Length: 427
Image (tube, rainbow, N blue to C red; front, side, top):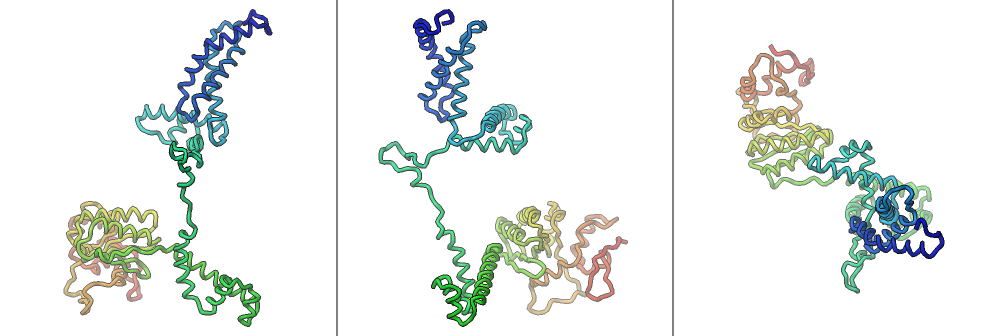
């Protein structure tokens, strides 16, 4: 071709012969790009076009073999075709190139680490920020987008995919709001309900409502604004305060006081139920106090410890303070051995002495307010006293009433019944 005339028949014949001889090689180069969303016929056509460009652009004067120029040219045409026509949605070229780099690096790191690498590790290997890696991986989602008009089967009368795509039913979504709104409207005064019915259902203007009720249009406008604000606040309050689950049949009762939420355990309660109740109480009590009364509990120590630890972990996000009171001696020993008392404030069940005032008749079980009042005393289990062995201290806590520790853990001020909360050094 180099020595033939540029416009002669001999050059065109030689050019056609070269293309015919190398067309099988160009077709074999397309095999590595199959099953990537493009048909094989399109890939063979692109490879043939790359072969024609390689034949026309080859310069024998450079002294390089023809195959060293043919293969990169055809491969470049195939890659360009995927870049320009392979993506179902348009993506910037920088994202396409970055996605290819991320894919190669991810494969190499997977073989080296023997696990799937994280976005931070891929970014460190490529010198990219983590959000750039996440952006490149997210771009792969739009490479092959399925059409809603695609057939679900190969039959001629098959349905399209869009016929099976569900849509959000506005009437079904608003059922909960309508039920709540019905209760709120029922609590409104009769005049307010009458104004709402005239405005929204009778489609009367404010002037007509004012004429029917014998008041000014401005007064009707203010009443409507006040009624709608009241309903809106009621809906927002119901949304922020979800319904509290009931554990009455499981042996767990929940009482709410002004200062704390008291959860009382009665008898043998399943460990999973206790854990769920504690976690629910901690999550719902925002920056408040959750007191667990274990006086009548007969649950296994390991299950109770696991439930308290899970509730303690949940309190980290909600900001609630968790405490256990009136813990039976055997259960308290288990909690101490498992280290639960280091995480959760636990107060053992104290044996009443002769000087202690007996409970009134009919008050065999302390109420929620009484339990919350007991928790206002400063905790005595935070740090061992200096010079006292831990075993002796635990034994003293089991047998000594709470009132006996008041002289060593704080002082009373001049006002009777008040506690200043200050500590004193142990004798």
